[in-house]
Image 1 (cartoon, rainbow, N blue to C red):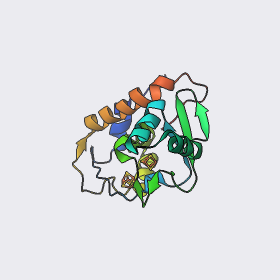
Image 2: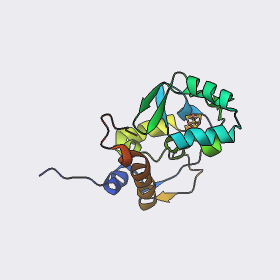
Image 3: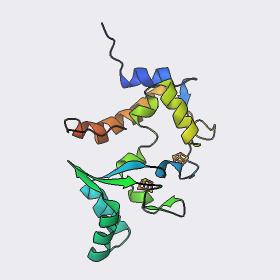
Image 4: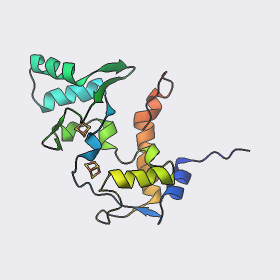
Length: 163
Ligand code: SF4
Ligand code: SF4
């Protein structure tokens, strides 16, 4: 019978030395390159308030930011970089969407050793030895949080978001 792996199984099998450390270097790499950034209605409202935008400026930002609507989310298709990245920093960092605040604790990053190697290549804050070592249990809790809060609510959608 095919064995079903839990999130904890996958995290444990991925971590080479049993722990994970992460300390963001603010390199901006994860905000660059083609990719989709998902915003809820509340995220957009929080960005409007944080940037203290007028109704006019907010609607102009939305026109530039949002290329598609899917159930529950507004989608920004970033080209070279997310348009909210300014001077290599997130201009809405305190109110960035959950997809961004949960990185790199995404299920895909702990799906396999190959994915984990790719994460280390792309994110210099991962396994740099500068962050506090986190146990597999703690990593699992963080990844489960991403699954529960971000992915599971739209798991019945036609095109569920994968992270
Ligand atoms: S790629 Fe990693 S280190 Fe660089 S900004 Fe993103 S989270 Fe931080
Ligand atoms: S919202 Fe901020 S953290 Fe998220 S991709 Fe855009 S610039 Fe990066």
